Image 1 (cartoon, rainbow, N blue to C red):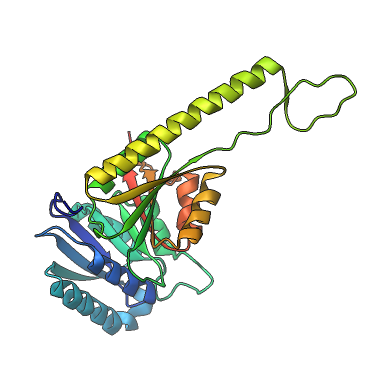
Image 2: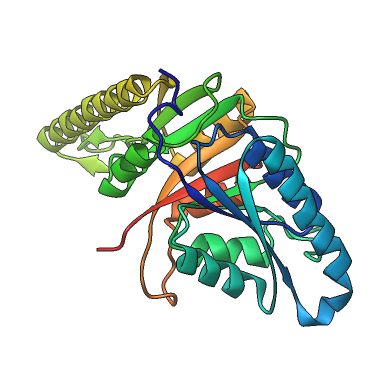
Length: 298
């Protein structure tokens, strides 16, 4: 069974503006084995001060209609006007979208800004999962899924289990256990030590607790890999110790990953920081496309 065999039709909002990152988002979406009867709404938003962009945006919408139509996907187009992120978030909510697909940076974002303001705000505040594409995009051959054992992460895995990933993609699941600081027993007088000084029995207890956490982490990783395999994914696991964001980004570069999948808890108050610190670091620094799946707020 391929990963797409058990999928239900999905409603997708695709943001297009003709930029190179937007083109990557369109190509990425075309590469997904979408379930039959899925619907895509391609959206462009004219910012009032950039009114001359209308012909370019209309051309981008037409291109999306043609390319997705060739894949047998039903496409509607919408050309709006106003604040791009507010418009996209509002439309996604109105359409009850299952997924928002967009580029990392728009046509008018300064080159030195790695993540455009619109992409940042949509990822932070939209309730639906966001698939953000970056250039260069060369297909979805290698995917890295970051898990941490939280309830939010577990819900992300269940969502991913029914996501339209290409059947030939190599899916790696990574779990990063925080590194244990160097612990040393209380020293004899006149003997210097390095690191926290604790009674020997406390050192033994902390090491035993850390070993327990490592066993739990390896078990979680194995269970997640088996869960994805049961849905038809070619999955394997990576277990490492260290700083989560640093290690995930290191493996992204080492494996030349095309897509990172991460979880985040969605909150209702837009004044709050919606993304966890690790997910936010991945969004900004992973250097590849990223799928952020949010668990509902509680």
